Length: 117
Image 1 (spheres, rainbow, N blue to C red):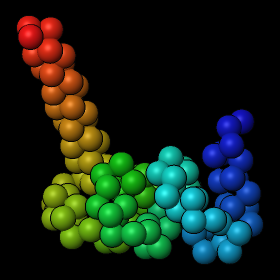
Image 2: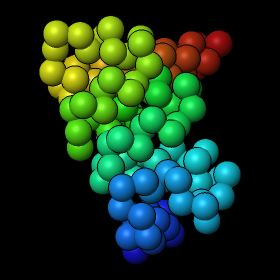
Image 3: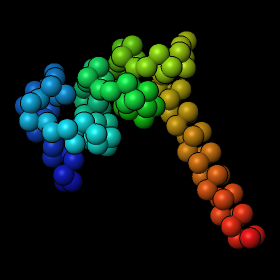
Image 4: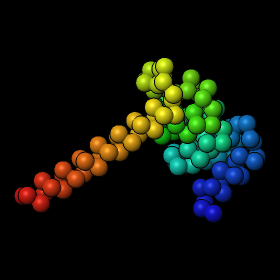
């Protein structure tokens, strides 16, 4: 089991309802997106304790709303507006896939330009 999952399990079992309020959680815990996503998959309401930047991160919000659709109201206004009237899980998954495809195309185009030079 990797280190992140061990931390998540410890935090989750120490305080199942308020994993983000556990005093033993270091600052680095709150900056590690992969750990935050794993915790939100178990407790979507933890989104309320995160920074505005993370509340506007589609992957982070997706983890929270996958566990609890009501977590959407804790996300940024921008993401709430984006998901308005749509299934938030499907909408966020599609947006993430689209962004990843664009990144891949940009990388490919950059490499092709370098090869031509």
